Amino acid sequence: MKRLLDFSVALAGLLLASPVLLPVMFLVWRQDRHSPFYIAPRVGRDGRLFHMVKLRSMRINADRTGVDSTSAADSRITPVGHFIRRYKLDEVTQLWNVLIGDMSLVGPRPNVERETRLYTAAEQGLLAVKPGITDYASIVFADEGEILAGHPDPDLGYNQLIRPWKSRLGLFCIQHSSIALDLKLIGLTVLAIVSRERALAAVSRDLETRGAPAELVEIARRRQALVPHPPPGASSVVQSRDAVAV
Image 1 (cartoon, rainbow, N blue to C red):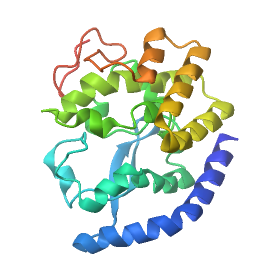
Image 2 (cartoon, rainbow, N blue to C red):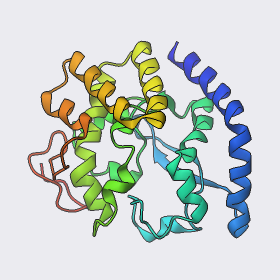
Image 3 (cartoon, helix red, strand yellow):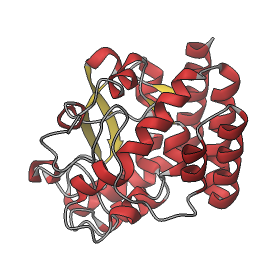
Image 4 (spheres, rainbow, N blue to C red):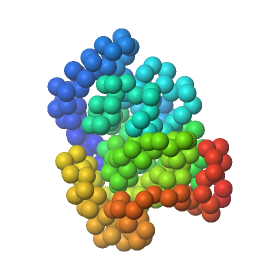
């Protein structure tokens, strides 16, 4: 049933989005005469690598800088790329990966291999299912670029401020997985485009109803400043991108 939902919505989504995607693809190509697509290696279910299709929002070879996390002020983002990222158009093209079965509509966001090597034993549970385009964490941290803007080390900032909560939200979503929850999260993702405040309130209510820990419900409301926190299964805060204290 989940695969049927994924396939049907992905196909319909690509067809409906094509009038917007095609002109944007042309603009991306026109700015530097290179492919409008960025084929991003990502870690999928059971740790298998796959190629995620994204609309290219950065200059050519931006991935060779060794920085995995991107702030809103990242100099690698092109002018057209800022538009693409603002309206999440780079995620719409990932419907192709859903269509061919690499991803699902709902599931933890796929990560780069270098970052998954930092996963604790608890976080390895995120690799037990297909990665997705959206989930609780995708809605709660849709402003990831703004959070990391101005941070001296975006990767470290991600691992200390965002990853601990994204992982907890992802694991909670997996534990409560159902078609009904998938449909709700798809709806809340659309709502977030119209009203982020209402979407966050709805996510926090849903988490509370399902018995999520109080700190996770509070984080979902996004009313408090994010502070460094250990990822699930770790006893201390990540100090570097190369090691996790456990």
